[in-house]
Image 1 (cartoon, rainbow, N blue to C red):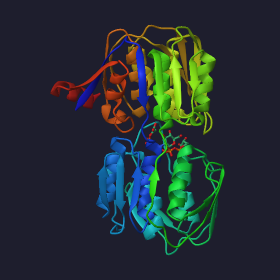
Image 2: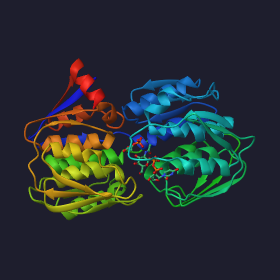
Image 3: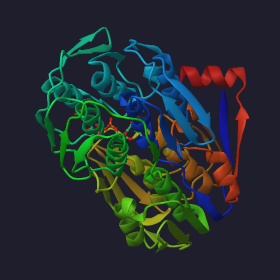
Image 4: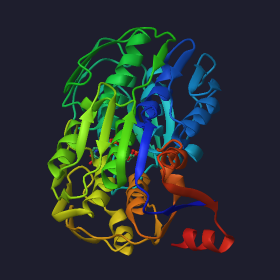
Length: 428
Ligand SMILES: CC(=O)N[C@H]1[C@@H](OP(=O)(O)OP(=O)(O)OC[C@H]2O[C@@H](n3ccc(=O)[nH]c3=O)[C@H](O)[C@@H]2O)O[C@H](CO)[C@@H](O)[C@@H]1O
Ligand SMILES: C=C(OP(=O)(O)O)C(=O)O
């Protein structure tokens, strides 16, 4: 087990290339289950969520071959093998095996998903969708059992705008008989990316990226080749780090339109941003002003960037309020930032940040993926050395983080933890 060390202070300079989107990748891999021949996905991020999903595809009989960042998935020999335990608990997106296996085999047994603990993360809207399509769904000892004699298209109104439910229902509906309409659908770019892959496989989908998605079921889906979109959350994280501790940083392979809400807030703070077609250039402003943010469904401010944004606010002048309306308890990073001398209090679903404060290096723990990103951003700005444990969370979603930040001039490295440190970490 390793820990991450950062000696804060050096200003970041240079270019960082953004990897393929985690939240697309984790749906594209299970989507390959639906094809009757090889699916090739290019530009995948080098993260543990992708490795875990590849292993799950192999567990159900898929043949998966990795060539650099490209994955060749041959789904022809796959079966409806139950996956009640084990790797499915390691990540959130294992829930996409429900929709994809139901779509192909009309049955599936999948353990309840893991992933970042951000407060309760129910999947009732996924289940509502599967049931509307004709499936019987039961929860037995922590595993979801799904079965249908036939899937039939349906009109499904999501009570809560959910990324996972929107994609999962799409996966189950593309091979259902007749027409499915998903109303109050989520509009994240990753949903468009998954719809693009499914369309290349032969699915008939209209409206992905809007709040009404129409799907006309087809009998067969074939293999295809697909290139994944860039990760807007990784891009947003590096943009925040550049605003926090950059001199001149070029973020490459980004779709700026995917980050409009973040860029608007950064500009309001006084961050200098130049937008290119696929690049963002961030140059230093020593005096940033505090702002308030409220997370919302896309295209609002993403909850996944709220935590790193909190770290940035510690160096801005004035009081900033961060309110998370999607995950109202997503504040486990705050106690750790306080250890680093941040002046922050949590009230209900808001964190109130008083700046500017000079952060100080400390021993801190990443409780989840974006809490980890928040601590890395803080470590870059802090005086002295910050030691971060909980790297298994960071590795789920940030490809080559140490290498990328080192190439920008950060003093960052990984070290093996001693047995005593591992015990302390596991008991904390
Ligand atoms: C793998 C993946 O893509 N993860 C992302 C996805 O998670 P995920 O798909 O799990 O998040 P959802 O969009 O489903 O959740 C949004 C909100 O709806 C609620 N809800 C969701 C489903 C449901 O059946 N019932 C229900 O009440 C959730 O508790 C949450 O408050 O979107 C989140 C919100 O942008 C992001 O933080 C995650 O990074
Ligand atoms: C919450 C996240 O991921 P997951 O849904 O995979 O836990 C995230 O990417 O910030």
